[in-house]
Length: 193
Image (cartoon, rainbow, N blue to C red; front, side):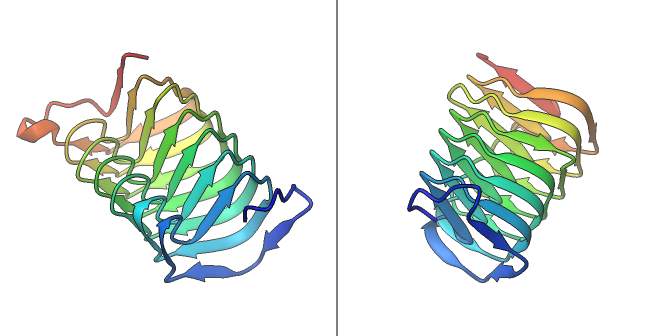
């Protein structure tokens, strides 16, 4: 979706599965602001970023979507967003995986809003089992559950470097970060924000 679509362009009511691309294994939204509603984005692979969704200079409205079992060989197993401002409501990010960072989400230089969302059982070998934020990203999370996510290094739940996520009424539980083998890395790690 990259032709300047607006919220009046609605993608609704189906499953996007077994997709493969460099960026955005399931859907790539570039320079557009469509509505994505009542979708399942499952089992997609990105050889770089955004296993399920890739957002670049994008401002979509996303509601009632399941993003499950996607993989990115670099960052953002479920979603990678750069210079974007998505509004996501009632979205579940489940069992996604990224190799470098952001098992579910990698937000770079973005300011998206996530309301009534679940990040559960996502994994990364690197930073941010559920969420990684970098390069001045300022995502906002309202009424969110971030639970049961694993990071190979730091930030089992959230890892933020040079970025500052906003958290309101957020439950963080049973997230793990191995921290290079010492088990001591925090569930939320914020550095250089």
